[in-house]
Length: 402
Image (cartoon, rainbow, N blue to C red; front, side, top):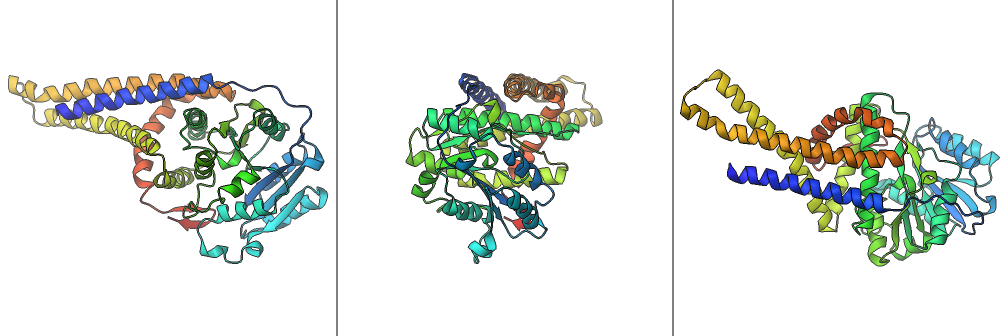
């Protein structure tokens, strides 16, 4: 029992330390504001799409209104074996906007059905066709701002690097469940930025990722990391970071934020998180594995301590023993209860200050009204998803993957 109490305390100290470190690095990252008026970089925006006929119109409309020189921009949509009329919808936009080009993965790579990494194959094929020097990837269900590309290129031209990870935020969140996802995702974006500043290249989001075409080619694209269906973002970040030291940065710019919808149902949320968790086995930086493992154990210890205390309370109610021996036997449960209270307070306080800072950047301080409810969701899903995400298959874009 003493060993377990000590373990719980050490896990709590670790959690406080890592969250304070993340918050310090996030706050220290300068918030860019100025935009270049004269840009010279040729850009190719790549959008993989599968069965997105009802949603892809948003991103295509936004790109048609984008504030970037027309002669320096091309947009490639790669249709990944869509079973709806995605192809026809994109073609209608392409007929009106000559910057938009549509390609079919089935035509470019007839053997693509032999792999589970469809999205990676689609992006690789698009990069081969791209005319731009800077590749920017996003998703078909996203929305972007008018100065999205200009903000990324400003960073690229003023602070040359090989890869830029940029912010993503959920929007159109209505239910408390969707607001929890948005607040949680704001925190994940801040952790992404902080981790990159700490030279831990474990996170990024393919909905807003920019990299040099030459850098992509020099690291041989997704070769060596194409066994996972997802991971087109963070696994590529690690490859480029290893070959180009100091060449990976996070862009903390309000105009660079890309917006994407949260998952409307619990099932879709779990499938998304199972997919994200499935990439954890591919981390080559063992510091990342250690941090994620300790955070998982910390939250799991909260559950175990709560169950232990409640079990002892129920047991003492069913089998009361008012003697001194009974009180002594109940003493470990009281100590566990104190540890549990300390853990909950520590997690709540550190998360509050960290998430407040992240939400402030995304101009979503309204989400802090749901903070306590979000904490309950967070405590529940980390051990659940962390355990099952590496075991169960998941469904993505209508495909069952493992």
